[in-house]
Amino acid sequence: MLRVQHAPLKLHRMSLNREDFQLLADIRGDDDEDTRLLREMGAEAKTFIAGHEWCPPIRSFYLAYGIGDVVALFLVDFTEAIADSPDESLWVVVGDLPSAYFVSESADTPRAALECYCYIMDDWVAAVVNDTDLEEVYPVDAEPTEENARELQSRVDFLRTEIIPAM
Image 1: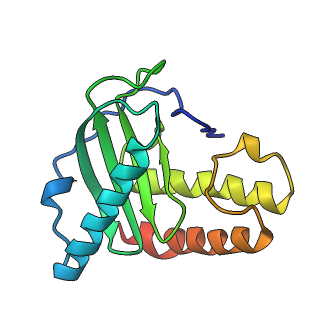
Image 2 (image 1 turned 60 degrees about the horizontal axis):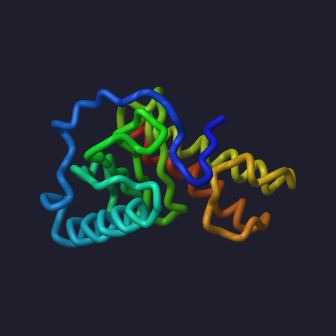
């Protein structure tokens, strides 16, 4: 199980092919509106990750996949390893769902990263529904109510059935 509280998980350094990713400043969507939305999501993701006290200086920030105002996946490369970790990169997800960051040895593609995000959110949903310890799952910025868990599960299901298969 992936567990993230106040610092990223300690896993190996990712060896991703960044050639198909877009640098934050160069983001281009399918049209002007999509471009605007994806750039706003990029700013949101950058603010989200940089807001953590453990965040080292950012070297580069890439859009790996995105649908404006729905979901965007970014890869952040830091100038140095994150404290007490060999990791120099993180995935960041933002959109019409809870923001999250993570590293994962199995997430070496954008598709794998969004699948990993779904598993992380599944853990939170299960903890809320089963009334188990939320300290053992990724901290989601939402009240741990059954209604919020159902809404999040609906978004995760949408990612799994509509977004991820189309990647």
